[in-house]
Length: 88
Image 1 (cartoon, rainbow, N blue to C red):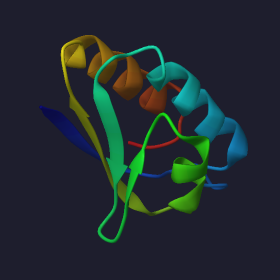
Image 2 (image 1 turned 90 degrees about the horizontal axis):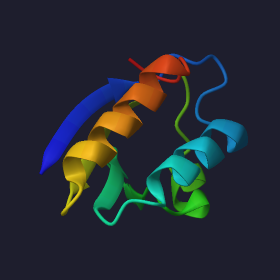
Image 3 (image 1 turned 45 degrees about the vertical axis):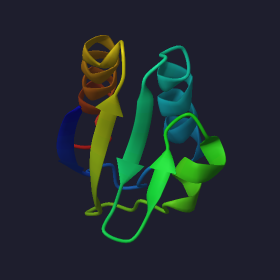
């Protein structure tokens, strides 16, 4: 299992467009991919789950990837999160 904690830096938070980009990037992987906050956990392959976390600027979340292709999924998703300026 691979995990990494992030803090949302985008002033708009993780709204519909970036959430859909994350879901699109996660969906092809076989691994279980989740975003976790202190209170909730969401499947990163579900747009409703991600939007339900209501991640605003300053919110902290953990990316958790577990499965047969976890290295590739973790690398792709951490790169997307960082390069799009969503979180650090």
